[in-house]
Image (cartoon, rainbow, N blue to C red; front, side, top):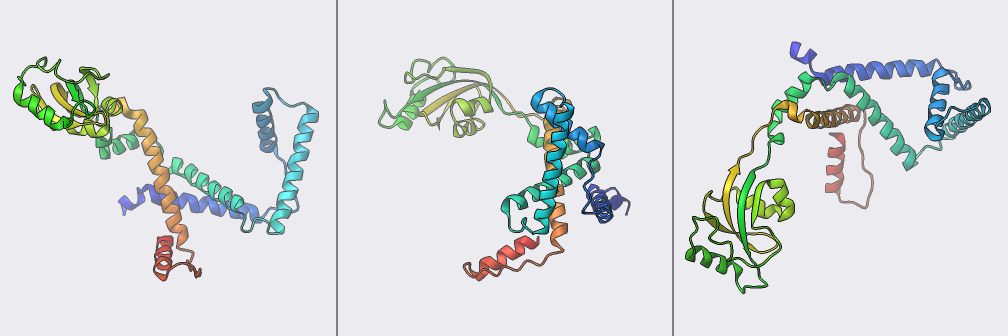
Amino acid sequence: MKKLIKEPLLHFFVLGALLFAIYSLVNKNTDEEEIIIDNSDIEHMIELWQMQWQRPPSEDELQDLINKYVDQEVMYREALRLNLDHNDEIVKRRLAQKMEFLGNDLTTLVAPATDKNLKAYFEKHKENYATDYNYTLHQVIFTADNHKNPVAKANNVLDTYDVSSSESLKEVGDKFPLPYTYSNVDAFYLNRELDENFTKQLSSLRIGEWSGPIMSGFGVHLIYIEKKDNPRIPEFASVKKQVQRDYEYQMVLDSKNAILKELKQKYKINIEADNISSMLKQELAQNASK
């Protein structure tokens, strides 16, 4: 029971229910024919004006802003009376976004990005923050432009030359605008320089001798790995900002899914369209109810 009380999603639902209840109560007691403009409305108008014009509005300009606000509010309320928001995709999308924003605000209250929460998230997902492999290596390349069978050429070189010296193959490869030596570079850099397929093959190669061949988009390579640093888990402090971004995104995603799941319980999904298969109808209805 204590564990349930400490559960953030439970806090979220309680806080959300309270907020919606207060909202309903406030709206129930508000006369729809009365348009109230309070201090917060005026301050908001002034802030928007200052953002656009880099100065506060004059009295006449502020009066004009108030008049436009009233006109917009009247037209908005009358549009609702006429049900003009019905089946309007733009209105639907905007209102759905506002519900999401409301959920996001609640998330920051029930699951704030405190050091305790961030460290717990980091411990659970620390592999996501591991550093890449880091290499110092030498490479030579054989291309299809220069060899009928570049793989056979690379294997022949391995059989013919001394593979224990990092300099023994320096003049053997094709002339190509790639460096012979990559010094202290990580896998991310090599992904950009060559390609991801090339980098993936490096981790299985032996250190201190020429080996391969391995492929890239440029051709066939022989590789001499002089030094390889394996991935490591960094200290929390060094990746805290990235952890916070990931944590906040995940909390928003989790709360959004939790809200939708809870709200969908109120609805029965019945797909009556006749231009899709019965199997697809059933699958769509099941997914919508999840």
